[in-house]
Length: 569
Image: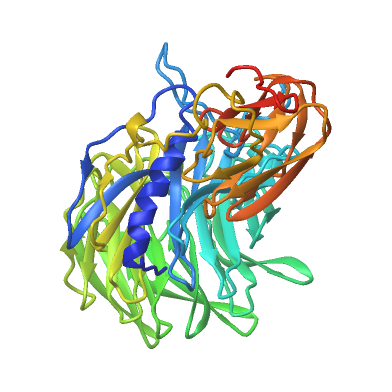
């Protein structure tokens, strides 16, 4: 779970974050914040996703190049009377179905910061098929189990990145465990089918995923059956196979299944789970064909269980105990050492599902640890060099937050924290490190009108000078011109240059705004060059737009008679 940001990337990140904010400003209100800047070691927070209700059940993983990825639920916003939701632009994951008689649902969001410094928001899965011609980052798959999913009947997400860059995402829906995997686009499969839909989360615990050296996913989860069963599902070329790792006796008053975690340690595939009957945190290691269980800590609730694996293959766990503390367990050989790292208790011990209190742990290549946990005040972030003494980091805007999850760069220079903003229903993200001059607001700022690149019209009314203009550039999520000029009565070609790295655009020519389509290019992320061949048009005005950014990237095309001026803009 490791990441670093080159110094020049951070500046580009702000520019792109601000530009992306424009693409979703169609209606409703966008969070605003006071821009802060500075140098040196500091924590910089911003809003990573604010469309509708985004960020519950988040998890952070980092690829081999040091790029952080976050998975999370996206639900329709919970609105006060009279509130209007922020518009979802073309290219945003779908959280409503295309069937007016069907229930709405959700999407499994994936957001990441690319090696080029581009913050990309997409999805692993969504509640409907992506329409033809629409581009959604990461190529989400349609998952029918997301129909009817709500914040109350679902239970967390998890994400892992394998050595080849393949993404593995898992989530607990209202009727089972689903998995989506892919590199350029996701495919989705149901790992476990509960048989019916839950009205409230709990019987199916929060699942986790890891990938082995061959890139095969391993999914671990606990569910209520005749007792509680801890299971591991593995996928190979022959499909999915499931084993029962442990069985917990049914007991009166036992809590619902706690999170189940899985990683590949030096001992092999290792599952961390909570024996809710005995009140113990356990691990099971695959020995041949058998799972061998051992106790890590007794007399604990194990709430918020999380797991990381260090560079030497040692497992590291964090969880809440029963005495108002956060415990860290570190594997050493066949044993585990326990250290209380903080005085803290779950914000609400009775809460289950997406809002259950969490702990989170990450480790860098040198063994430096980063931990986060929820308490009554919000999300706490802390670091340790020795694995015993943790020093809290002063964080902004995490008060009142829940579901903190962490990642850290391989060299330990940068720390990443994702959390859910209860009041704003937003996914928040923060970076801690010596990240140079990075003016970022908390939440992320919008772009003021005077900061938007002014499109050119070549002076005067569009087409008045009689010059043919059929070249257009997309840069900074804006067209470089709001006026194109074509010859009337002749076929012509529009040349489109998308210079926005990682940001998708297309060129769509219409008879008028909201009118019939004349022709369009495919939606593709930049940098890319495209052409659109257009049949002869009658003299007059036409309308063009980027379908991904329909409120900010528009313009007029005028078809003029040879040697004469056209209509006005």
